[in-house]
Length: 116
Length: 110
Image 1 (cartoon, rainbow over the protein chains, first blue to last red):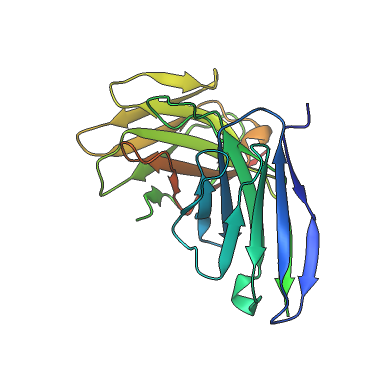
Image 2: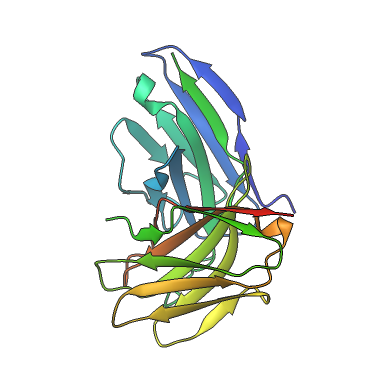
């Protein structure tokens, strides 16, 4: 049981390049999330999904797109990378399933992205 | 809107106690606490639900004041392993999202 995995672990991009970050979970969780973490800013939600085929915007969605074609995978795309997108990106998943409150979120190990 | 955590940083000696606070200007349904060690992913500690129910860590306690929209995390008899950055995440009713604070860096020294 691997939990939440993220690919790649580290990437360097030039301004204007595009890339996709992959998040996979094997816990059969309904909900998945993408966060970015910058020094002194905590974790900020980019996009999230409450089930296969659904996505929604979080707090800082500009410059990112997401897709959830399969329940176990959640992809984060950068259309045209900018230096301001240099950050550590964390994926998380939770059970969801119609509970009355937000269940525990399980985080992946993170992806460090540097945009030059 | 991000919840406000205080203090921003604290240094403790082993065995000392600490309290970390989290406050929000919005009505909350639940408050979650996570700990993150340097270079690692955040790890779940505790959930506090509206109505007083708690779920989580055995050696760490917390409270949730629904009237004030505030939560406090109590770390007693601190150990070196308690070092890390503590984040609170707040949930508004029906949102199924967490909004995290900026974190409190806790350092425990021998």
